[in-house]
Length: 211
Image 1 (cartoon, rainbow, N blue to C red):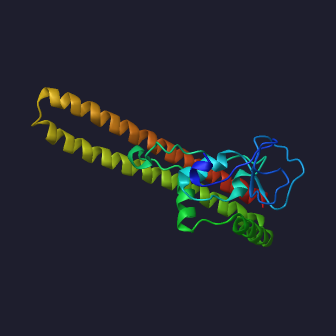
Image 2 (image 1 turned 180 degrees about the vertical axis):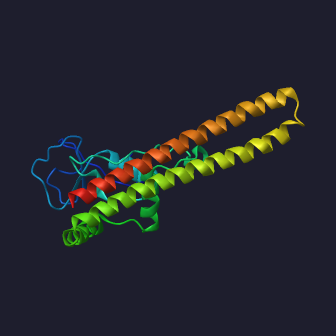
Image 3 (image 1 turned 135 degrees about the vertical axis):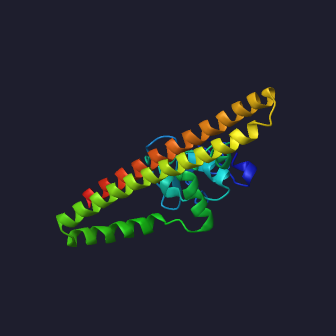
């Protein structure tokens, strides 16, 4: 796979074009959480990094794929999120990386330090107020999402009633099955979106309490 994209490879054997000690090696792929005789001149990564780079068509930051680190979600290149109606968080992160707008690990660490300093200067009452505010915002987002989905569903139902009046029975049956499939996909996408927002909200709360 690596050779197909212009890379060179070596392995731990006498017939490898590179020795284990070679300084030409830039990335060392490991499928176990043990690094023997670590070299500072190379990156130690898990195999998923290779496939995610290929699918994203860019060289991804190695920090998320370091040995022993919990790997990010692996996205299938055969799924069209536009048609599915749901875009995973990881796909959004990859799009930001391609645009150059995603924060680096160093930026995240600096942001974490700054947040810690602000939290140290704040009182416990202010922290509680922020958490209450986040909960209210999450509830408001859920309410708005449900209202919008309900309104769209009603509008589509009215449009469908009008269009079905001029359809034959056979066409109506096919059309009905097709619309049922589309609505089911949208409902699943909305559930995933709401679930993701709740998880992200909990992460923010946990992060605030730790700081």
